[in-house]
Image (cartoon, rainbow, N blue to C red; front, side):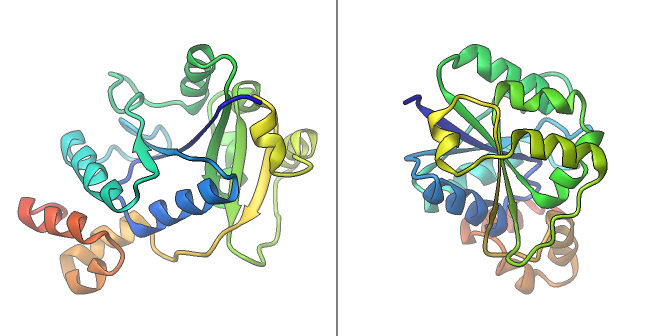
Amino acid sequence: MPNSRLYLGGSFDPIHHGHLNSLEQLRTRLQLDTAFLMPAWRSPLKDETNTLDKHRLEMLELAIQEYPNLQIERYEIERPSPSYTSQTLAAFRARYPQDSIIFAMGMDSFQALDKWANWQQLTTHAHLAVFARPGYKLMLNQSVAHFYHAHQADNKEQLTKLPCGKIWLTELEPFDMASSSIREQLQCDPNNAKKTLPSSVFDYIQQHHLYL
């Protein structure tokens, strides 16, 4: 059986409990010892992050102190160019040719998968673990639906037994807060925003006057 490597990518601007809990739930469900948070240098589908990379990395380092089974993968944030997931996963496949590589994403991202660069190549290099809130209705456009049904996993065990090629959908406990909303709350209602962040991350934001 190959080693398994589970990644959750994102801007993490800032990292919050939703990111951390989602990845930890997936790690536990797949029975993995470790999972990786992978901060992007910038997302091609989003505006450029306003927060310096060093601050985002420091907040991640602080956050994972409360999650001993999570680590940081710096591949994308250390690249001098935009982050395209297909390129990243191809690089990981070359780096770990025998391993199971699992890329996690939320249902919103999966529904818009056909807007990603080289999106149909993702399963050539990795599995996709798609998480949604309980009771979700699977609503996909024709292209993504065809892609999903062509690669649908029979069970979660396939993600750790095979190196790539499967798409697994699972339900996770919901977290109704986006980083953009947290940034707004940090300006107008920091005490409420504090509930969504690891305490060390909130203290760091206050200390460095971020998101003001």
